[in-house]
Length: 111
Length: 113
Image (cartoon, rainbow over all chains, first blue to last red; front, side):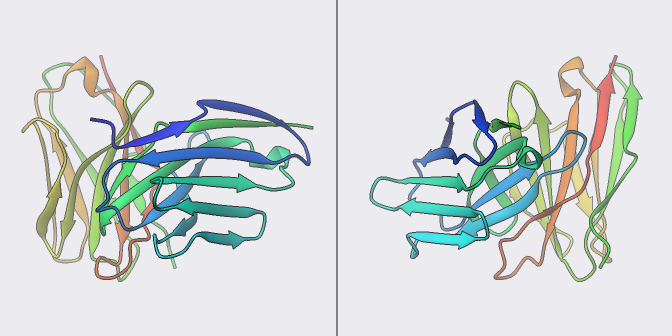
């Protein structure tokens, strides 16, 4: 049973545009929602994370929007840059050390 | 602070063999988690160790096992390798108490022939 559904599978955005990746979860026990960025040949790197008592969190060009009632959360990348081209994973945790990941979104930012 | 280190980075084995992968967490982190990453299945949780005890376990067969030492270093072992075990095996460390932030290592790329 896939507990975290991520869309789209791939995304192409022009430089300077906004990239939006969406995730939906089923388990209401999840209490921590991180986003990871992964470049080829590297492990995932934590980008930004949110807890369900907050509806939005912004760090630089990256924003998480969280809708607890809809059990959905999304990542917005403002002013997307070619260097942002990577695979992005959403995840959800019920406790430290165990993450359930979405399938990933391959983002390509065209110059 | 040094990041999470994994050894070896690349490994080639044949079916039926066994393999041991190693992970050194960030200094001070007591929790180590292991994940399998494949193109078809994505990132799948294997198990997590905290203070030398397995605290969480994913849905993998018993051929996959792990352990953690008193210095928080961890190893995972896969016995009787199958072709489908070819994957990137990732280790992540967290402080393990209140913090959920996971820091991943670069992974070990295992190829089973």
